[in-house]
Image (cartoon, rainbow, N blue to C red; front, side, top):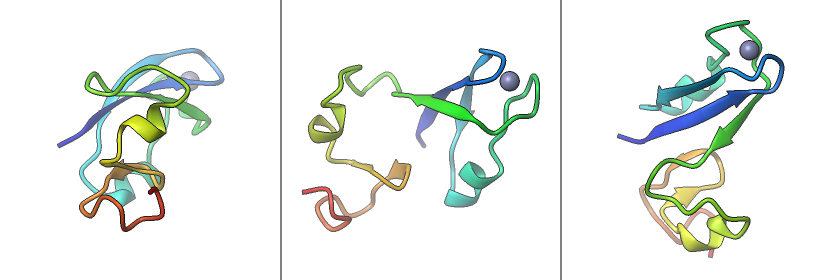
Length: 75
Ligand SMILES: [Zn+2]
């Protein structure tokens, strides 16, 4: 299961979140201030570069592990 790193845009709190389903993203909020303006960092297996979307075909733009790479409009 993918674990994502998030940074709160309001207070700067950095935390990790295990995403098991899409609904986890909808309820995701900062554990410190409760705001939902979060910037997602790439998990450890993804390159921290601007072109990371191209280099990680398994990552769906909808925000999660894509079960069918190439069928979600990425490629
Ligand atoms: Zn916060």
